[in-house]
Amino acid sequence: MSEKPVSGHFAHRWGTRRAALGIVVALGAGLAACGSDDSASDAPSATESATAESVGSGGSDDTTAPSDSVTLVTYDSFPQSDTSLNDALAEFSAETGIDVEILVGGDTGTMLSKASLTAGNPEGDVMWGVDNTLLSRAIDDEVFEPYVAAGIADGSIDIAPELLELVPNGEATPVDYGDVCVNYDIGWYAERDLAPPRSFADLADPTYAGQLVVQNTATSSPGLAFLLATIHEYGIEGWQDYWSRLGENGVEVVDSWTQAYYERFTWAGGGPTPLVVSYGSSPPAEVIFADPPRDDAPTGVIEDTCFRQIEFAGVLRGTDAPDEARLLVDFLVSERFQSELALNLFVYPANRAVELPQEFVDFAVVPRWSRTLDPALIDAERSTWIDEWTELVLG
Image (spheres, helix red, strand yellow):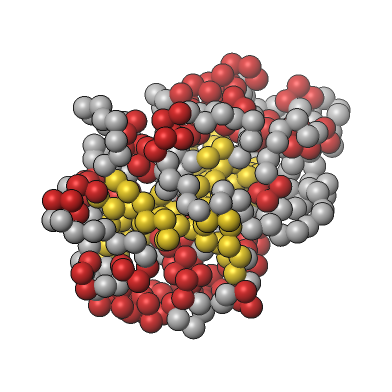
């Protein structure tokens, strides 16, 4: 995201009518609850699956030989080396004898498209980063093998119920959450003695013409989240008119978050647009990675535009190393690995036992409430909305 480009600061990732339409508002840091009392008991847990030590030893019907490596498929902003996150994965390898190879699949949408095409014969063993805007597609395409992480199954790992309710049968494992929000360059507006926009309506105001860059909803997870946020705001009958007004106001569309943030955003890439769809956690990244150091955030967040994003990991169906893949998923929700998420991916860990770093607490923006939509509604309408958006905005 920024600047002073940080190794993909996000590496970020931290890489959305009304009540009658199934819209749910997540208040505070909470998420919309689905109200299900069902547990993920339909999916196997670690206690029901062979561990790495017992693979092929007669404790399972699976005759797959033990593997000494697993491939973690993830989005392009996931750090591949030289971070504390990678150090944690190295510790997993040292403890289990299972090497973790990282395979970058592109932005989240591109990554999932590839996984859907190869479902049952995957390129890797575990996938990290499918979010709630695309989760139903992954489930429908049977990308994942249902599995409940060991710590979740036995209650030793505390994951918020509202996260688990999205995957009641262990379809995938929630690993982190955050908010997709419009960010602005504080200095750019200060230099012009212009107040930054504060709402969706402001973004379409001629005062802010030509100042916003967004991502393609068909190829970018934050781009899709921003579209869903506008659907939440204007409803199923009104969002098209809003996007028409954004188009008239000179909104720019690019393919990915990386391109938007590091090439077009004024602060991060020296581009022409002081407004960019990014994350509520982008400001702390700009402080933490600042060179020279600084004690204030150079970017701000328009809280009214925030949409809650929850990310999941899962065992890829058809993996050649199912037991090793399950062990890796167990580790991905462990306190050891989750403690590295805030300052590497700039997301909030799903594991509620993890204490957040103070610099993250100081500068991350947690909106008073975040927009979200019923996953069933997203599932039913996503393709139609993307097609309509593409025709309307891209022609």
